[in-house]
Length: 551
Image 1 (cartoon, helix red, strand yellow):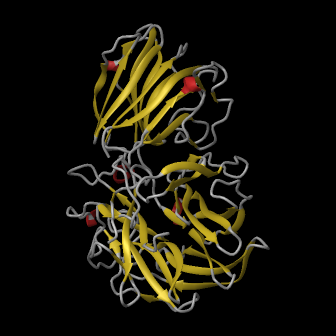
Image 2 (cartoon, helix red, strand yellow; image 1 turned 180 degrees about the vertical axis):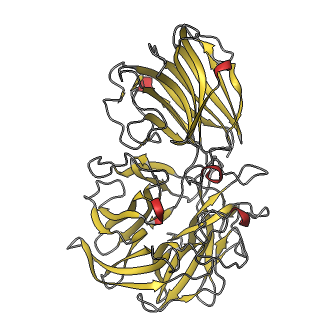
Image 3 (spheres, helix red, strand yellow; image 1 turned 45 degrees about the vertical axis):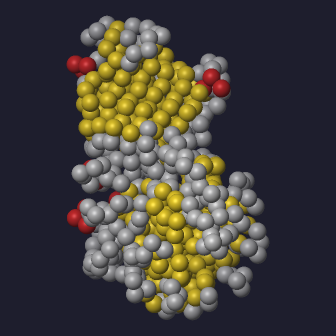
């Protein structure tokens, strides 16, 4: 009798959208979008499909991956993971979205390969610019195929377009032959994207995401005996969703679709699926999901990653093992593979006195470089040199990681001695360059002192909590933000005292959500500095932590 453990969703809480999963032996890898954050494409590793550890990043060459000036949520989109059994090569495909203005998208798709998921990775191979969410399929006959959403910009044609198939020649490092449209969707939800091809029992299965990236999302499947089609649709479509009923929105460009929010669904926005066959001969679909703040449709943690156990029915279609199509908060684990009770939320614990920076810490719009972020200038501390403000999309001195729990404490210890009011350093809660909170040390001319206060960016507008500023003559403080679902309260303390003092009022942070911004990233916690005076100031940080108190 097989023993099963339970996997709890989401398996990757917080900002981890557009998952792609790969199993090789009993090792499982998962990649997610990183958008305007650097380095590009995170790779997670797991043995049990329930707990995932960040292993490395893929795109770390600033000469290739240039993100400066990228409008959120452009940047690095929807990575794909595959393994070519004939050559033993691992492949990763990603889309770099440069511009989304006017719905006339400017994007390029690239592939890299390696002998190990730990790299080193090859130089990027340009594939195409026809659309986004490109993926590779390695067939048994040695042929390689790229499958992409063709982004149709023509007036009067169905938006967003069709799924297209192109042959890929790894030896030549390019696509060859004609482009063939193989699907315009397997359901009537519209917003077709995220194609992946799999082969099982003589059929090619095309898995796509349909219904937008929001509340109407779903995982859709079609199949054919010939990779070039024609493809028939699963009569159940979608096979995983948060909206388990049929609706028609072909041609509707609204991807968020808040009106389709389902209050009975334990997980929202479920779609963008990726299939994995395990070493235990079982099948799972990893998919995008989200959890709104209670009583609202605002998802501050962003789009997350969940998983559902699947099985093949007598007609050769994939079905959720739990039954139905509504994504579940728990799913059955693999046979004989134990799962610990450790929480999925892991946070960050970066002690700079140990001369290291936590792997989870990323920077927006460009790489972390010694000229603005150094562990060497003051041993035992991380020194961050001020550059442009958090409204900028260029030289932003910010290190941050996803907040992966609705109840979290984000904290740091900082020393900073500004000489001008436009120099700031401290602790940030950050969604994108238009929406953030910054508990900052700065120079107050009114107080004639270094001070501590909160600044807010909301939808591109600035506000300051000037009545709540605190004199801080020595420029030293520990700062923390306690996040309790849709609220955040800042605290501070100086010297060696144990008690924390409130800084400013409790602040509603629901504006840092996809639904309020029109984007699709997620809440980050971080440390940073800016200097609009002479770009000469720097701040020293002793540690940085994100401590979750629940999933």
